[in-house]
Image (cartoon, chains in turn green, red):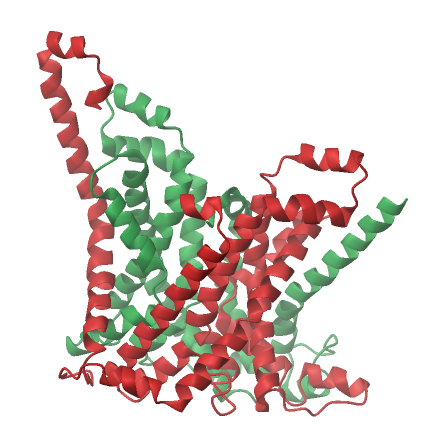
Length: 273
Length: 311
């Protein structure tokens, strides 16, 4: 009886927290479809009239869709490169013992705690000096490099869970190390690798600092800095701002909804530490 | 590898030696080639820049030319009144760390009860984690705008028209609130994953002994997950110092005055808006030293097996 009551209370508490995480999404969605006047009269309740005027206004005033495209141009190759490089490094660190492996791993671990600005400051000067400012290539490489230490760290603890006997068995059967990597490690480590790929995607897509510094010209600006600047320009026009925020969040939300099963399992299996 | 063979085997089978040498060489070639992409990128785009920042922190670098000026930048930093204000701000923002830990723990414990629909709740609680700090920050600043959502609620109680972002303490409160909301999902995951390794027999035994729910939380759950709590504390302290940039940028732009300016935001302004690269490099290094000290202090203060093993 009392256990029933307490489970009811737990459920109620979960509902409250759940509302706090869903409400902002609804707030963005509903208010992006109101007019400014309607928003000012009633920002909470259900709107009486929905329209896509704010989206039209957003596309007409700033190159918003281009900024999404710019983000994809940078994020997709950086995620693939970083995940590939991290998985190879983590494989060597866990299954192919070599002399300098530990030194290299601890160097990466130290770097992981380095504030981004320590690295970015000279890189920005160098990129500008060599005429590569507002060019996607250096941004892709820098994002890749910055995400390698954490990715390697996560995949290292992930691959450690793969029994060495599996690797040894493959070696005895005459498989080369390369073959062990893509026939044994990649299939078994797949959930962890996907989780790291998603985390890297989120890291880069959602980042403001690096993209703001490296890609600040209108024809290269990524979506997150665009949103950050939109907020300054449109504080008086909340519906247009909300339309931008929602569209900026949609790719990450889709990625999360589609991969939630693997992603949540990967995160819970201790992949984040 | 050689150690594993018995001494007799070595005498009988000389051809195996060359075989072993060959596999060892193969192994070395493979591992260095496999490490190459990560090594090149990390050395070229992280280790070298760090060295450059260290060197330039002793120069008056303006992004084009630089001359060595010794510790002048650091002297300037220590005589800059804004810096002490900025450091105090970061210390104030540390209030978010215990708040995040409590929010994460409460959420994790509630989800762990596995009541109706707990999987759905777990799915929902991840949502803030996939949103950019920019989106979270803009949303929260919208809620707290004059005449915004919060004001309208307060008006019902006869209050309202309070300029949340115009006062130092309420502006800091909004930043902290946004930070806690954005961070508890990650904390919940880490704690849930630690809780899943706790032997359920412990809870059963405690239940038979008549231990209350609170007692079980205090005596079983929290001790068993202390490693994760420490990990979260370290990560969030680092985050508070190094990664509030996006929140501050969109919520307050450092204001009013410098009351919400963090070290990373101030470094951004001095470097990229004022072009004082040498001074910025010194600031960035100072930030790193603070983070390093706080991390070491936390690891020393809470000696814990898990962290020392580097798991």
